[in-house]
Length: 80
Image (cartoon, rainbow, N blue to C red; front, side, top):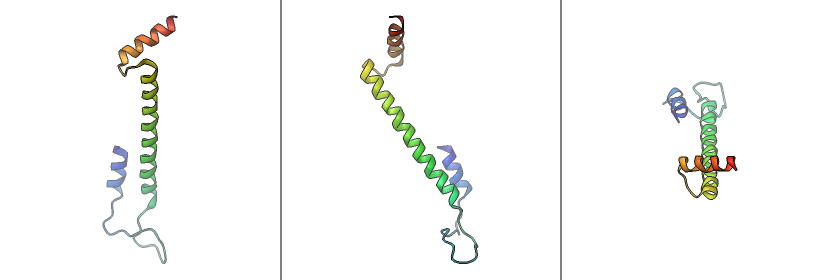
């Protein structure tokens, strides 16, 4: 997503090294943006999987992905 791209572009360092500190901190890369990016990727994947499960349930119940037909069927169910 755009937030991931923003964090990558904001924190890019050409001369940075891994944040394994053996001496005085000089030019180490901040691991927090990397953790935020991987968290955003995992959360986006989980939301996509949840949305696909909802679509599968709708197709199983109403035998279509057409939102107009589903709304019509839901309206019929509410009336009866």
